[in-house]
Image (cartoon, rainbow, N blue to C red; front, side, top):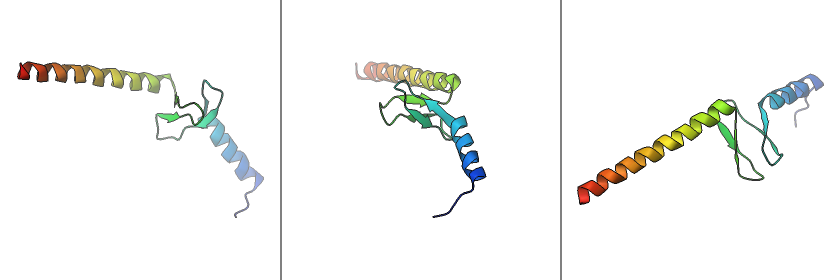
Length: 80
């Protein structure tokens, strides 16, 4: 096992604290740089990097839901 200096440990702790977000249940999770959200291991909720990422995610879900409803109506019109 590699021994780390105190300086390396402090750098790692600072990097973790910059990327750590707290869930509603109180558990702290680290979010990596290339992901929008992380699923909490305690309660299963999604923890987003920031409010903008959460908005984009919810907007994408609403858009997909609307497209699915549109596709269902097209299929129903074809079968009738």
